[in-house]
Structure formats: structure tokens, C-alpha cells
Image (tube, rainbow, N blue to C red; front, side, top):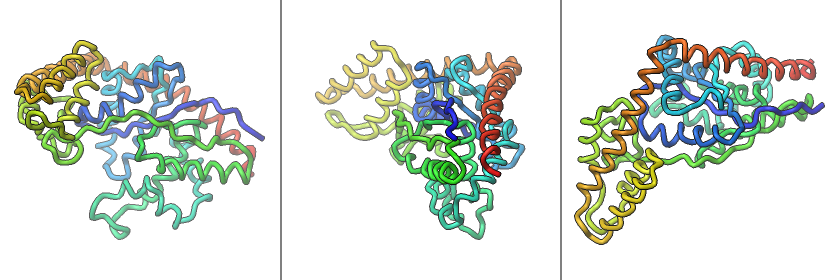
Length: 330
């Protein structure tokens, strides 16, 4: 048998707080770019995955918050199927148990997605067993929707290999139910810390622009950001320009940024003007986001209805998949 594949693209959101503009450019904007192409991506909040290293009360507090944040950033429920992973947990866990038969413990411990989840200083003696189950659950999330493509950055392609291999093994033994999911390359911008030490991260807020930052905080951070001497182009200057361009689609703003950089490379002293203009761009972005978020959060039914509608579609698709699985897995 060969099942019909319906879901073109699927991606997951990890419930977290204190997102940065780097999170927006690297994880949110690629989804926004996809939603306009008529594919109607499936987007789920990975609240079950979050339990690997968070207490339930923390996850429960954040999971609807992250949906509100993504809606405020432009995720359109009319163009995406948005749902909570835990709303399908009976089906997802069932499929995960079946898929687990197709991978050895040794293979599991070599999965890149698992290695990335283990925190520095944590070893087999202290890591909880749920971490080891992470790649299988990740595969079940993808395969239960029979997703053909999963958006990934260049450094994440290998993370899909476990799901692809489990799909191939099941199909070979029982029948072609699952499409081996293909990595779908996205233009995920990588933004450096304003302090010049690694990537921008909420764990180092002094070098990051948080979506909750006020205009005063933004201006202070960008004013003290590491850039470059006149006539020089450095990774930090390149990153802050990339950040500013990513936060506005205004052509005049892009042209002005290009003009200021051209003057900078001619050794003109324009860094103060450049930083001031970048601050204005970031402040506008944050202000617009914060207003939209406040409006969404003023009516708790907005997020609940989005998840209810998306969850209904996702469950119907998942039940259809499991019906096909049960037909051959006997």
C-alpha cells in the first residue's frame, strides 16, 4: 500500500520566553516567508519536548504565551495550521512507541538532535531518560502528519535523519505509510551578540535586543554595540546591519543603511548616525510588536480559538495516519 501525503510543510515552536530579535529573524521570519506561498504549513507548539528540561508549571505558563507572541509577530492562523503538541499526545506517544522498535540504543545516542539537547556538564549519570526519547518523539511529530518537508537551517539538516530512517524502516517492513521527510532549506539569519561574543542570546541580555525591550533600553544597547573603525567591515558591523534590514522591509530604510555603510567604508565618521538610525528601526519594530501582543492578550479567546481550530485539523490528520499504521502494523 502507499498512503496519500497531504501535509507539505511542518515545523515546531519550543515554548520559551524572552525572545530576541535574533529569534525572530532566525526562527519566526522563515515561517512568515512560507505562509504566503499557499502551502499552509503545520506549526505546532512543542510543549511535550519542553518537559525534557522544564517543570510542567513552567511549560504550561509559557505554551499559550508563545502562540500569542508568534501571532503578534505575524503568524497568520488563516495561512497556517497552529496546534499544541500535547493535544495529540495520545496519538503521538502511540506512534513513538511503534517507531522506537526501529532504532537501537546505540543509534539513538548518536542522533545529532539528542547531542544538541544535552547541556554542558550533563552526562549519562545525570541526564534524564526523556532526553534519550527526544529524537523518537521528534520523528513521531513529523511522521504523524505525514509531512513531506521540514524547514531547517544549514546546520540542522542531520537532525532530520532519525525521522527519515525510521520512516524508511517502517515503510520497508509494513507498507509505505510515511514520506521520508526532506529538509527544506530556509534563510535563517544568524545575528551576533552586540557585545561581539558569540551569537545573540537571551541568556546574555546585555548583548541582545529582547522583544520586550523599551526604546530607552534599545538605544542604550545599540549605542554601546561593538562595530568597527572607519573604513573597516567586521562581522559585528555586518551582523547589526543584517539585523536592521531584517526588521524592516522599507526600501528607503535599506537604501539609507547602504548609503551610511558606503560612507563608513570611505572612512567618514558616520557610526553615530548609523547607530541612531538602526535604533529607530529596532524601536519601531519592537513598539509595533508590543502593541499587537497587548491587543491579542487582552482577549484570551484569540489564542484558545486558534489552537482549537488548528488542533481539530491536526488531530483529524493524525487519526488518519494512525488508522493507516494500524492497518499494516498487526
